[in-house]
Image (cartoon, rainbow, N blue to C red; front, top):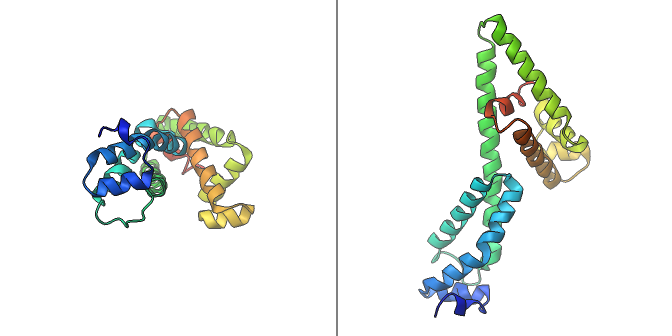
Length: 196
């Protein structure tokens, strides 16, 4: 029975067949959900390569847990929840890297430097500040509260009377816009965490 012949099977039926050893059932689940998951991941990350990598990781994890999963596991629910968690970790790691890069910039800027280098840094700082000011109002407010006041997502949500999920969406949007306007230059993006 080929993948095409599995097309009429429901996800739970395919899941059951796969756990009984039918690899074609897994392939059908993969073909059925892969593109939708990649599209969702791309909307959340703005990075096509990262989106595909995250989805591949989700399916790999799903495959490896074949015998640990409950009999009543719903593949679609499992895959979407797993992707949501990986997207969250992706943004957490990105922010951690940006903060690390920003700390290096800050440390470097505190060393004795030539006047020309200091002027270039001031120009870069002004450029980044200008890009931040161009963010949509609510998006900018969330970004500034998170960076300037060092508030957690929950604290930002309470301050602005919005949900934590909305805060996360605005932060993702801010980073996506900054990455686009700064040409994906990590050094410039890192400055965004220094010069608020």
